[in-house]
Amino acid sequence: MLITSIPQYIQGVTNAKLDLSTTDLTTLFTVPSDADFNAAIVNSILVSEDSGNADTITATLTNGSDVFSLFKVKAVGANTTIELLTNDLILQSGEILKVQAATANRLHVVASIQELSKTRVTTSALSRI
Image 1 (cartoon, one colour):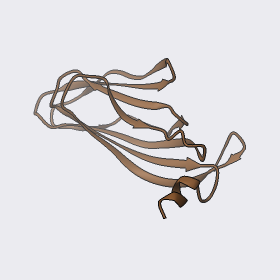
Image 2 (cartoon, helix red, strand yellow):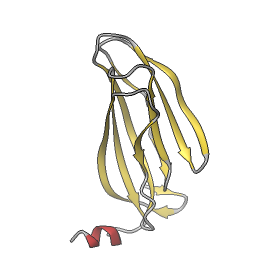
Image 3 (cartoon, helix red, strand yellow):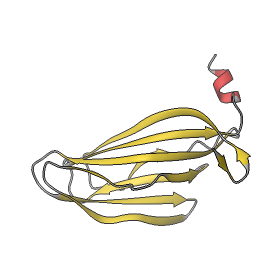
């Protein structure tokens, strides 16, 4: 996969998970800003309502002091799971994906994410050996 003409290598995969126990805007995932990393691909964002009451979720993308709305007050039916994305979402180094529930203790969020690096083996990976 090529992004901005720089070869990209999958450095890791993760599921970022949250039980939204408050109505605070909460960080779901921050793209590493290590010199080796330069992007992440969010393949899926699942939101599950588990209290038997419909609710809403808001999702934003933060880049420095700029905040971009991804989903504003998106409905989630009682005892249902919805997929927020219809296509992959590409995040750049240092960007932050945040979510907020309208009501506490009703929603769970799971995002499937691929972290990309500019090199096949990163210095941060080598330091873990």
